[in-house]
Length: 348
Image (cartoon, rainbow, N blue to C red):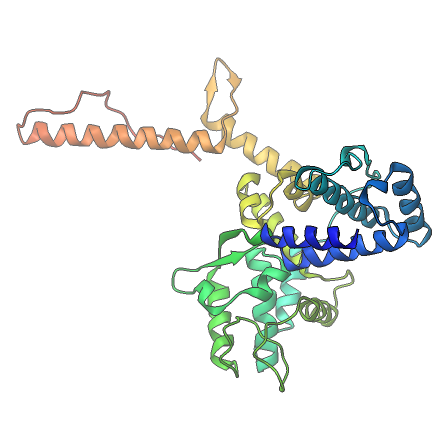
């Protein structure tokens, strides 16, 4: 059993799973192996799974964490059936407990201003703290992704950076003008030449990348300094980034790309905001559509993508029109099929 678990973990590493994922899977499977005390994986049964889940519940483990255990066991069994061709329990038979999805807390705009305000960039330590907070708030990346960022990953001139997310998948993210100013200030005051953007604040070893736990403590402590009652976390800053995009009518599919989510459902969880905000966005979008697109007194809903395509078609038509007019003025032979002369419409 333990040998099969090791082989499975090696397989995950070859598939590019993150070290954190492999570490968690190893922990979950080790606990299950100790509890089951079986030597042969074929001895895994639904009855054994139920007893294991009952033991987790008896130890005070939450339903969400119980699901993580069961998901890991299902993945392990799938590997044994497909990759190792072993006769083991069908992983689809393992049912996950029903859980209520927890809405990740986010700051209000006033609270965000207070959080930035308590790091006034007057000292090396406060400059570093402000750079970290602004980076999380302004880019929406995961705290683990921030820890692994190197200086070479960032282009301050073009205002973008490359980030390696879960399963070693890379994506491009962007930074705003304020982040550029703060990062330049931070880099000019940094005491080391480490390849990592943010390093440990340790006089004995400051070349290693900062840890996720350190950033969590930093963000929490500055939230307390700002007088914010709710717990301030990197996840909360990540969700604030997503909510800001949603409030600006950014399509949720683009928000999904910015956050690096594989599933749109995960993005919907991050952008789960108050009803008043959702209604305001909906009404604003409805007014824009009904103002510009009507047919037989009926409103027609047109997506942002369709409007962009329409703009492109109108732009091409107008370029052709202008070329025809130039050739007529120069008394040249018209080489483009005539089009109806139009004026550029206004599309909000």
